[in-house]
Length: 211
Image 1: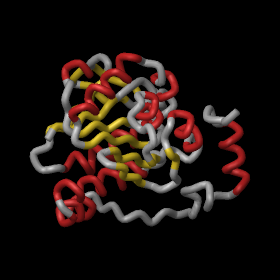
Image 2: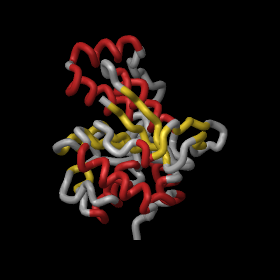
Image 3: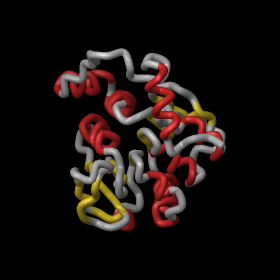
């Protein structure tokens, strides 16, 4: 089974690495990082790069598509090369997935029309503009489409989909070996739990302000 994890300039690293470390543990999986062009692709900090070993054109029919999000997602919303590839790859994929604002790219490609989907909490309202039905759930399955909420939710998505494909015990083994046992020091991981002034601050600065 081939897993294609899409990279683009200013992606968020954990959006890609979370599924890589979980879903990428599928038995005999061929996990490849792909981008419009091969070579290093810088994350949103500019200080970390992942290498795209294959171009989009070289990976036309992956079994699983993983689309991360990040600040660079906005610049990709009208990238015909990427959007056309997503549509073509989706035509034969078994699973088409996203993390964080990667769901907006799936939506821009027309893949989430009428489907339930999630995204980063700051971007959630924008899914509706592309015909999707936004939900605040952490991981959402709608047919073969699997979307995860912000950043760290990609780990949950990877494990959940891993369980669907390889069985619960295999997914549990991966969770155990990665020691994924979250015990956050603060109850601030969602807008419902975080201090209201922080939520308001980030909403006011967000590139996803709804008008």
